[in-house]
Image (cartoon, rainbow over all chains, first blue to last red):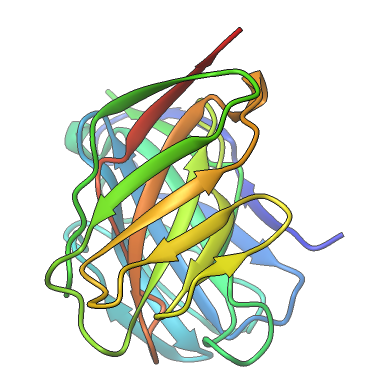
Length: 115
Length: 110
């Protein structure tokens, strides 16, 4: 089954404690992205990657890091989480438009709370 | 990058067609219009997309105006399970960037 998986699904942590949210896709997609969703603000792109070792900032990259060492994985790293990073996070993957399925597949989400 | 504007909320009777409008007046020639929906806090689900021609699939139809400044998503026979937030999005060719607006909350009632 084609899917994007994220772990953990729920996480409560404290300010400053480094954490990693993993994302994996099984569709051999080139593109992967991270979004955060906050009430009243919709989904905003944090980082995206167009292929292995190629990453770029989205609209709200401050406080986050990513890496793309393998095609299937795209972890999101919070080196020093702060309460304003409390949010619902989604990972997504897709192929370039016109090169296979054009939809972006989203993971189930990770609800992060930073106290 | 183009932004989209949508009504905040809409109601639709079960079995009737739901027509969800979207304005994207600043869309560029290389930007596609995508529609997604999100049920509760689940991951957004793809519905349909198009560049300039009208499109139809098993879920919905997408009508794009000739000047591409606006579009309408049509759910031909809405069901209670179609209650969700619907996002009209533009996607730039050659990137993975999706620009989400705040969406339309569609409530389908019996």
